[in-house]
Amino acid sequence: MASEQFIFLGLQLLGISAVSFFAYRSFQKRRLQLGTEPTLPEYFIRRSTYWLGIASYCTFMAALFGLLTWRWLPLEPLVTLVTHNLRSQGLVNLLHGLDGNTLMPLIAAGLFLFFIAWESRCNPLLILRDGIHDAFAIPSKAVEVYNALVTSRLSAVDDSLKAQIRNRLLVASIDPGDFDKASTTVEYKWAHNCLLFDHIQSYAVQPSFRRLFAEPSLQWGQICISYNAMSEKILIWKAAEPHYTKTVKLIKDLDRLTGLLCRLLAALVVFGSASENEVWATVKQLGGNVHEARLQHAYKHILMFAAATAIGVMSGREISVSLHNAFLFPDQPLAHFDYTTLRWVAYAILMYVLPLALVFISRTFAFKHQREQPDLNYGFYMAMMIMGFMVSTTASTLILELTYYKANFNFLASFIGHMRWGILPALMCGFVAYRMDTPVSESETLSQRVLSATLRFLGWGFVAVVIMLYATDDLTLQETNLRFTLVGTAFFVLGLLGASVRFKTAMLERTLPRNKQRPTARMPPQG
Image 1 (cartoon, rainbow, N blue to C red):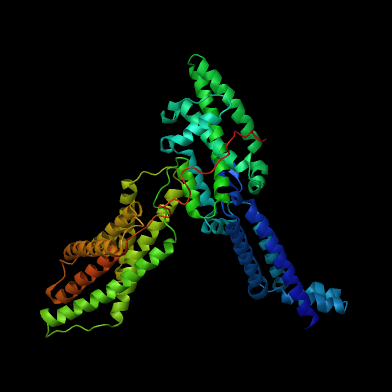
Image 2 (image 1 turned 120 degrees about the vertical axis):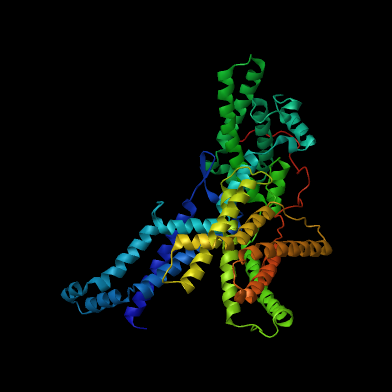
């Protein structure tokens, strides 16, 4: 190996090592805003998943840097120039050889290192870093668990657990009815904080969680001080006459303590749970209103919809052609499978699967930024129908008009003319969004699944026939065969899509007992 190649390889390895180091530091710097306090995301995910995310980001950055300095803007000409002229002591030739071809790769490599470490919202590499965080569900899981704990309802907590909490208090500051009062009252908020603090102490005695309690950003010491001080304030408040200003200030202090407790407890629950089911079982045990339709592996559903659409187009068109040739116009037979079918498949996927994929994205975004969701959010379903209508109509307009009428294309007029083709995709988007919030039970038998899928197939097939007969009523007599084929194909496409819309919850069965093993005696606060 020549000396220039050896030096170039060494510089590549040195640069990749530096990139990996900066990427590692950058990945750990990102903080989540839970309530009013920033939190490191590493405490809201299992350690194996977190390190897999770090490895993925560092590997991607190292590969990107390697391609940049090896293929796109190679450093090899600069290394060759420097080594050759230093060996011959030709410093003048070295200075003359430093031009754009040799200096630009060095500048690009330096800028790449700078962008990895630069914390700014405008930094594209940090946007990519945040995307990898999201891909490994590091921020989303933190937000979901935190919001479920903050909005938990004490009425859902087991009565025996409530009694244990009252018995373990050093000072009787909770009455039996405090758990059932309105969530805006001082009594309820204090009972909520006692529940959270009591559960946190079950982790404090375990050595494996010592690192989290020693983490300054999680403020365990401050929580203990605030909790003890709040206990005395509650006793004084209950014994005194009602005072509006003092009550408002006390509620504000209780809300801040709730945020700190939920932040720490969310870290403990996620960090200490062996599985996704165990996380949400613990949250439910504390009265958390866990949204049941927490979909896993959304890409599998999108692929299933794409396959159902493709199968529906091919089978629907071929069956329609067979019926057309056998019964309607045997003297004017239509051609069976040809390249037209493939165009129909591509067109149908853009019309149906693209807006359905946007439904998944929209639902994930809405769930991440909403603390508590109602069981059925009809406003969201309507929004998804409107979104599906706009996307599918736009796709139909661009595909058909640009394909056949390029010379006289007017988007607004064409959009209005193609609005009828967006009705079925809009209805399907609304149905998919609704089905996400009405998941099926794991105990559903095979016969029940088959029967339910068959009914959905026939129901949506009938809807497709009605809508398509309306959408194709302006076709001429010479296009009757096309109308028959379109209606038949829509029957199978919508029927198969409707039959495949089946979602299961991420957690329906609890993996933990109702009352988790807890300390038998009240532990003193650990600061």
